[in-house]
Image 1 (cartoon, rainbow, N blue to C red):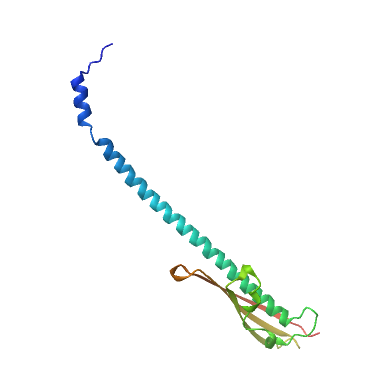
Image 2 (image 1 turned 30 degrees about the vertical axis):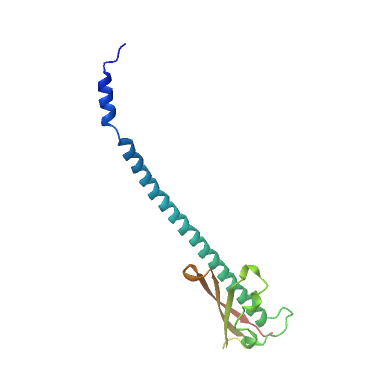
Length: 157
């Protein structure tokens, strides 16, 4: 079977299409570049949000460690009598020096005590602890703060 198109027709068809593939290639290149740039932004945002979450968790752990320290001072482990809020330190950053997980973290401890009128010898302690962690530097610095408050009741037997 013979082709119905002549050589001159094929030549004319080929010359009229010259440069179209270049335009398609440029269009695809631009589209792929935009998609790649957007993907890089999404990945960057994702990694920063994970870092913020990690520092927030570390700040919460610092606050909980400070609360544990305050409770140990209020209620000594040897079943001795605690000295009340006067024995509770106000800052716990020195305690974290040996703990790599809480590096660059601190805890600020506040303690209030009040006698419970209906219960003779009972004291209500309100402990407020602020855990703070920081990392990075400059504009990329991440700072996280978590505050916990707990109440504990001391009994005199």
